[in-house]
Length: 121
Image (cartoon, rainbow, N blue to C red; front, side, top):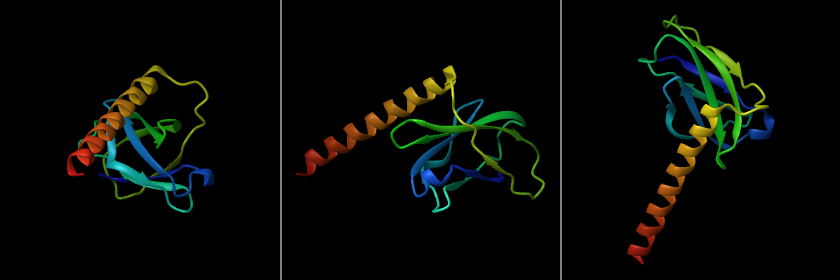
């Protein structure tokens, strides 16, 4: 249940992002998060996350990968860890799979909202 502060860089200040924790894909924050003016987001690692090595991936609103960071989940000790995302370079297969899930989900939300809007007119 610790809070992790993630630096996204100045170019993402104020941007809407989605943060995911892998091994088992887990959306952190429950929805889109808005980065601070300093280009940071704070996410809470689920208390039931399996201890050990994981990856934290952050995606822009357009579905592109902003970056990722290796994180280690350990027993809570009261500290607030901080990390900065690595440059993406090559994109691993799991990232493509996550991107596909995000795009399908976003498409479903858009279709639902459009249909809901047409019914109310």
